[in-house]
Length: 223
Ligand code: HEC
Ligand code: HEC
Ligand code: HEC
Ligand code: HEC
Image (cartoon, rainbow, N blue to C red; front, side):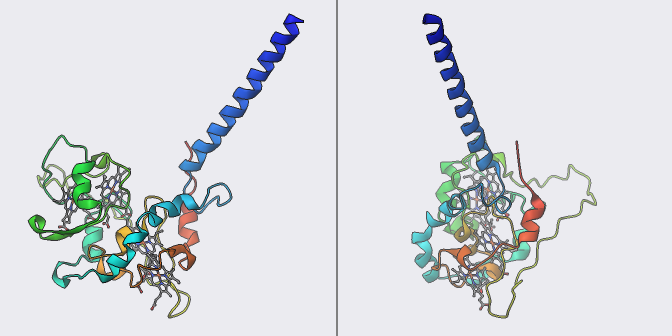
């Protein structure tokens, strides 16, 4: 009788661990997926959450004055990136060389605004939760230690791609690391060509569809 009980206990433990491992594997996969490929597997709200967490600022963005002489445009936006979608380099001095980022960077980049010292609007960070900023963003190096290369830059997708004259243009870029639409598209730090005239319509993807071909081409990221 004792033996039967022990066998029963072990099979119970075995089933429990199979269920736990299966669930944690599934969860791990969900966060690793690029949006747009397996819509059935990923809760769409995951991507919307970042945007809605800033939606209370939408009306402020709409009323914010912009000094036209300090505006950014897409040319300078692209120039600071090795290729389309690459992390931009840090174009200003960093006060503490050993600081990885976090609060130091967020003091200017969390909500943006005009910075007298650099005579520019601070771009709003689309991903404030990734606090090790300098893991991806490196300061600009002006010493000529490297030879010039022929490395071609991936060209950016076209904008103003719409079905009819007044219909909403498609979203030409992927959504990963772009979850927070208002960060790049609203307020005085947004490049002028893509500053949205309607930041208060916060449910952006209600009207703007993904350009599916380009996002599908990226494929799944699986560990
Ligand atoms: C005193 C305010 C301030 C602090 C602190 C600050 N920044 Fe900036 N940052 C700015 C301003 C203003 C700009 C825009 C500069 C320009 O356009 O010439 C900028 C630009 C950038 C850009 C370029 C964005 C783009 O789209 O080209 C990156 C990347 C960046 N900062 C990262 C950082 C990181 C990482 C830190 C922390 C180590 C940091 N910044 C700390 C004000 C600040
Ligand atoms: C995992 C890598 C990674 C980390 C960590 C990271 N970034 Fe970024 N960041 C990116 C990439 C990639 C882009 C470019 C997105 C694009 O332009 O398509 C970007 C864009 C930006 C921009 C440009 C927004 C704009 O409108 O021009 C700023 C500012 C910025 N990051 C600041 C920060 C700050 C501040 C931190 C730390 C709190 C940080 N980043 C952490 C990868 C990262
Ligand atoms: C890291 C900055 C960044 C974020 C975040 C971002 N975008 Fe963009 N967006 C751009 C840039 C830059 C372009 C210009 C084309 C390109 O380079 O991909 C663009 C282009 C667009 C366009 C085309 C505009 C036109 O006139 O044709 C739409 C629509 C758009 N984005 C919607 C969105 C939506 C919706 C979100 C949120 C899910 C979002 N974007 C998040 C930077 C961003
Ligand atoms: C109710 C539908 C709707 C919603 C919601 C919406 N848009 Fe739009 N959007 C449009 C239409 C329509 C146009 C084209 C306007 C035109 O051509 O006059 C447009 C144009 C744009 C453009 C091109 C520049 C401009 O302003 O004309 C960008 C960038 C953009 N939208 C981004 C966004 C972002 C970011 C959000 C979320 C904060 C958003 N849109 C929410 C309908 C919408």
